[in-house]
Image 1: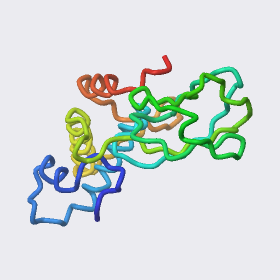
Image 2: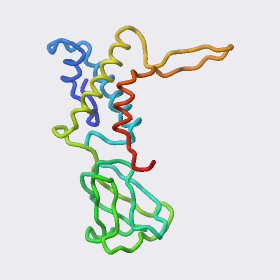
Image 3: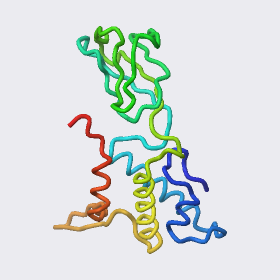
Image 4: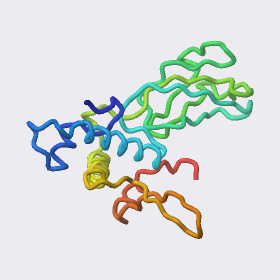
Length: 189
């Protein structure tokens, strides 16, 4: 079983990090699931995209601002911007890839409307340019999930209090929590 295309680490990296023999594929399905889950958790908790992919966002323009922030970054390229059902000329907007935003080239505001702007863009990193701290953190999360799974546990623990039962997510060590915090999207607050 292979990892998803959006997973930060390869199956070979996960095998090596989890000290599994490269020629033994009996645990590949579990390793793949752990690597996929680790990448998904990283993206969810940071609000970012790490492995490059094409995204489509529909946003509302207020009719006053000339800047629209995209939900995910870094932005690699913008394929199209459609406003009120009309494809905008590429020369009518500019992209600030690092900040994850597009803005009108002529200084005018985006026309106001509800869910009236559709942006198709590529965000994330190619496999060869993924930041090393992201890869290492994904590997650490993969190994953590793999160890918990190998000993029969999960990332949730069932807790009962006063006759009520609920699931509690496993807390990460402080260094991992801080690493995730450093990667978090801080553009909006």
